[in-house]
Length: 454
Image (tube, rainbow, N blue to C red; front, side, top):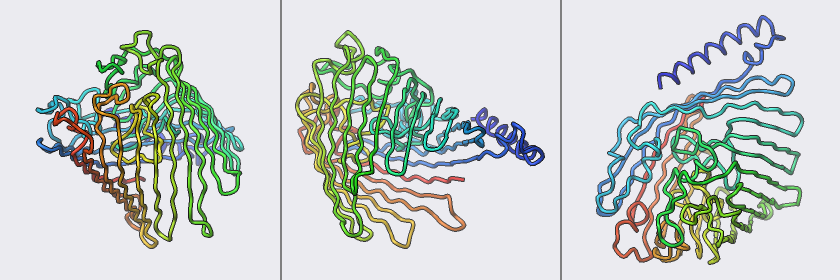
């Protein structure tokens, strides 16, 4: 942390000096930095998790980051940011659960999951890029933040996931086109940077289709990920998203979504989703025990939703069906599920033969900077012993979510507070075996988060 503070101080001093020099000579190269922008972010995150028949686990982390973006010269600018994370207090996150033998799942994510014993002086260089922007086209090369259906920030811990590569986007008034090549990843809850294959398996790996422990950690070969996408809004009252993600030597995913957008005269809306996946070569490794995407499987995901906006309220009924033909697979290190039925706190990645039903409601206060998100869902999954379609041996469950956010105004502008609570109740058979319910179901989770942006 001392090194990061020193770097931040040096950066601030440099920018201050550059601003002074830029006032004297606005045509000099130093104006590139002197007229740039400096942003800061402080974050406090309290997390607590409780399972039946076990002790409560908890953690209080604090951290922050600094970002600098230069003034464009000849349509080119540079950006750099870094972060630090420290533990204030927490339970012993290195201690395995006495019943299941597994270590903590949620609180450990506030720090570095690759080394649970290290919770202080965690630093990461997040952004370091050069960007060309002219008219409606932007080209970014380097370390950057990215949001796509499969690779996204998944910002539910102290810091989001970050990627490295080349990213191109072109936008006009109603349509957007994207293309890129990514070859390095620094997933959420880590501080190092990893090659494509190395980044998969930092989170729990689950089971092979025969029930043996998956062996793909540090065993996958891939040079990178190619993405192309389009977001089309030129069709009246409809938005269409089409994406293709090709993970070299591993698998290919296609995403299609169409949504009807509501308006004052037509408050109802609806949407449809389709995801298809197929293996590439042997799925990452020629050894079936070490591959990520078994070449004998493919996946098909279907989704639908219907909703209505009524004054300050937004209600939606959501449905997802993952068919029996195989597991839906996507590295959890790269992002969260894009399904309509996604609820914060759990995913349906690694599953096949799933039927999910979720009701969501959002309230936006008309006179206060307050939003309340609520959700309740039933997730009907294969048996915990059906390893071919249940990678993490997860039982069927009900989940209930509450998310309250308040953004302060006036003198306190820049401060934000958020409270999250969710509970997962087992509906499938856990055989009263702890590894099937500890940190999975019959558990509650609480977060209280405070952010300050300046």
